[in-house]
Amino acid sequence: MRMVDLISKKREGLSLSRDEIQFMIKGYTEGTIPDYQMSAWAMAVFFQGLDIKETSDLTMEMARSGDQVDLSGIQGIKVDKHSTGGVGDKTSLIVVPLVASVGVPVAKMSGRGLGHTGGTVDKLESIEGFKIELTKEQFFQNVNDFKMALVGQSGNLTPADKKLYGLRDVTGTVNSMPLIASSIMSKKIASGADAIVLDVKVGAGAFMKSLEDAKELAKTMVSIGNHLNRKTVAVITDMNQPLGFEIGNANEVREAIEVLSGKGEERLTKVCLTLASHMAVAGQVFPDFNTAYQKLEEILRTGKALETFAKFIEAQGGNSQVVTESEKLPQAQYHIEVTAEQGGYIEEINAEAMGNAAMYLGAGRKTKEDQIDYAVGISLKKKVADEVTAGEVIALIHSNSENVQDSYELIKQSVKISSDRIEELPIIYEVVE
Ligand code: URA
Image (cartoon, rainbow, N blue to C red; front, side):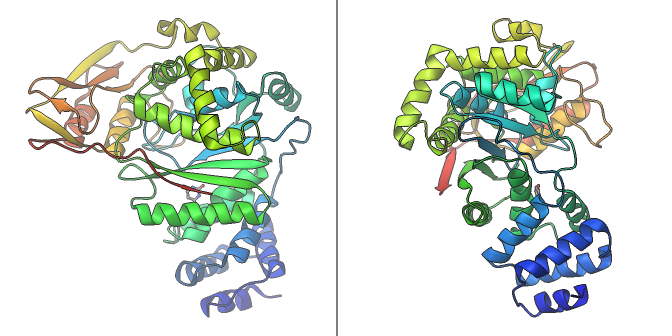
């Protein structure tokens, strides 16, 4: 087999067989197929696409290109959750203990944040003593004992995807639906779960800017999952404004604790309950979505999910007192108000700009090497459609430096106020099963 023939075949819009995809991914991972040939193939895919069989074969070959996590030592149907990334997205911190409380085992691997979106691992590390690395035995034992553990990505997971993603980034081929879908799903498949619930974000602060694109990505990923015998559900949720009120690390943990106590912001709570309900149905704990939603709402009210979160923190070396004494989380030195220049209704809070404003404060990384300041961030005081009066506080900046000019300006620019009444944005757009 020759790579040049596979490039030509794709250029002409023909489908590649599983053997051909295997040859290509194996050769690329091992270095016998060079970057220039792989880039030519990626560009051919960009224009010609891949059918669902090719997309599934590509996903599976990338999943097999490195370590594959074997979760068979954990009892029950293991359910994973993935978000395509957004600003203020602390859903994993809420959804995982919530479903664990009703017996759904979640053995989760999460990433660090880069750029305007934050990572779950960084948020958890804002808790004093919390360890994101566990031995395999400890990881399995925690999931068997109280149904959840969350670790950072380690080992050699999907090296083919890592290499291909890096190449796509510099060859104008990131924005290809089958390449994005197979890239995300290969990591989920290699992580070993039996069922996957995807949170596909759509809007100004998300990777997918239009509902049409978000739907296509959701459908492609669900088809891949079904082809590979993993029950997969995708929920398309709003990222036209940050999720919840808090953006940062320690302050996002604080907000997650509020939701787990049944006192969270309504839209964030709804997203979490929706994702958790699909996970609980996939894990066969409840027969249908409505029953699951009702039961999980009750679990939030009783504080059982918060108890699970505390146990999880303790089991990974963290100070679990933070769940009742949130002042034990890192606190910033300065708190600076951003006020509205005019009265009216909040028309827009640009999520990407807000994420960047938090990053400038030190809550996120501009480059992989940057150190995070867990205490800093932004607390929003208003959401889209809220009424506001001139001079009212719209956001609070938490900083360890007195100079917050860049973030202050960005926050001001990212909030638009209209004199007309504004309709509230939907929070859940669609569910693809
Ligand atoms: N996220 C991924 O993991 N892969 C892509 O290709 C795009 C976003």
